[in-house]
Amino acid sequence: MKLDIKEIDIKNLPSHIVIIMDGNGRWAKKNKLDRISGHRQGMKSVKSIITESRKIGIKYLTLYAFSAQNWNRPRPEVNALMELLQFYLIEEGKTLVEKDIRLNAIGRLNSLPKNAYEVLTETMNLTKNCSGMTLTLALSYGGREEIIDAVKQISNLTNISSSDIDEEFFSKFLYTSDIPDPDLLIRTSGEHRISNLLLWQLAYTEIYFTKTLWPDFRKRHLLKAISNYQSRERRFGLTGEQLKKREIL
Ligand code: FPP
Figure 1 (spheres, helix red, strand yellow):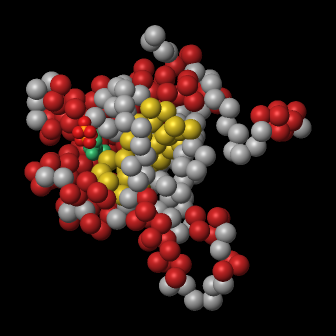
Figure 2 (cartoon, helix red, strand yellow; figure 1 turned 30 degrees about the vertical axis):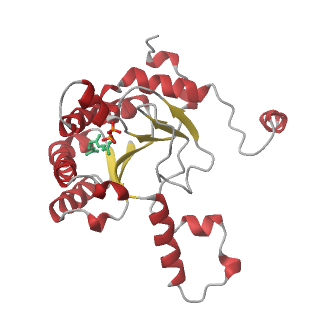
């Protein structure tokens, strides 16, 4: 079934969508190409999904572009991914401004190669006043690493007692302190894992898995994921009855 934007409820959009863009390698294999060609094709989906998310009215889009563990991939693949990131930022910086998209990044960004880091910070600076959508790239990102980094910062604070520490306090030390927790996580390619992504922030996120490989993922797949999200009841630990009573009040 081909979905149209009219078939989703614009008043009940997920505010924050995060995507694990998986399956570039398998797409390449299926098409008798090398893995790097798979990532290049994946870039087309990246551009398309950013554009569509902005058009639909999604306020926060986060893409898991490179994990802390991805550094262990073969060197040529790591280099190609870093180059793709740079090309994307150089090519698309102006378009992001035109579309009123603010670029944000999370992860151990100082592990990125100097050129990639520089163009990333330049583009974040260029788009800092944009407010239509926040696009967050998770780069050299790991959820456990993020929690460790937060604990390290807290342990360096003086004048702090254990009674000061609650969820709100802790969240301020995460890389995501200025963006809300995701409402919807999409993982492509048929794998059912969260792969060290936003371990703290995904506590109440709805998860949608699709067999579609990332390089094939387009607007209709995004709309299908949103439509599926809209069919769910988010209970946040409450009962369905309690939720109904809250709606009446
Ligand atoms: C997972 O597919 C994908 C990645 C590790 C990289 C994702 C990167 C892109 C889509 C391009 C760069 C993105 C930006 C925003 C610059 P996989 O290689 O693990 O696929 P496989 O499981 O089929 O082998």
